Length: 328
Image 1 (spheres, helix red, strand yellow):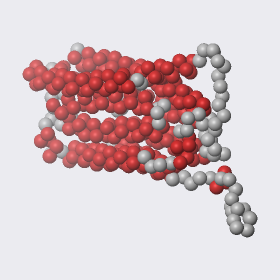
Image 2: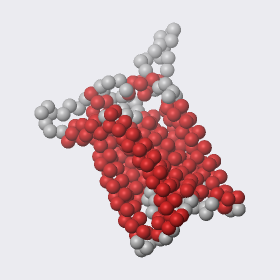
Image 3: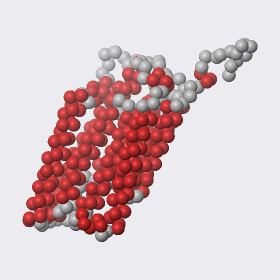
Image 4: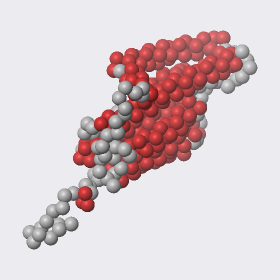
């Protein structure tokens, strides 16, 4: 156990392949110019969303009523809107990164949770009547302090994860050698990513529809709860739960590429890290930050060991010493 597998399993020529069709769907949505267009759209939505939210807050100062219940009075609440757009775009990048690199996809999950943590700071500030209340409320100071410390810690750990990911690995380089098996594995990951992109679109559409319904309920006086696209909404929780299933499926499929112990252990560990992030999304602070930090630290340790994994001496060609006896 341990050698990269290179024997291809060829599909019958001329036969319709749903797998190939899904992979082409991924290639279509992941084309560089479409990614660039999505990025530009995200920037426009974030900018105009911020301005619109600020305008509605200014209007709420004048007329009050249900509009004030919907958008709030604190101008810092408007920062929530562009952060929502950025987080959604990060999730899209995460889905599109799956066929490119498992490690890259893991890093994007860490980026998402770190952005959620730092966004909590804006949420806490927006909940205050005015910024002066921060000096008078010890609990608000503690919550903001935890958000800042947690955000900075995660930001630094994500940087370390990227640094470790850049370490050279002869074994990993061998896995990337072009082969029919590798091409088949990438095609399957593209198919999974395309299905996930459809799930992402469906979840996003459902979340936006529910948000509009909640907003209308507030404006019509039926409800007084301010709707928000927060990490506790089903959007992020459901998506990370589906990511766990996708990660397990990819781990199983990767056995056709290599059944090496270190490869399986790394893949299983990344699945466990994703589960920890899913748990963090449902946890309250400071437990949320602690679980997220644990997930990143765990992944860094696993990736560092994987990168420095020594070659299997029992799979090396037998060597002899000067007396002709086996070297190992």
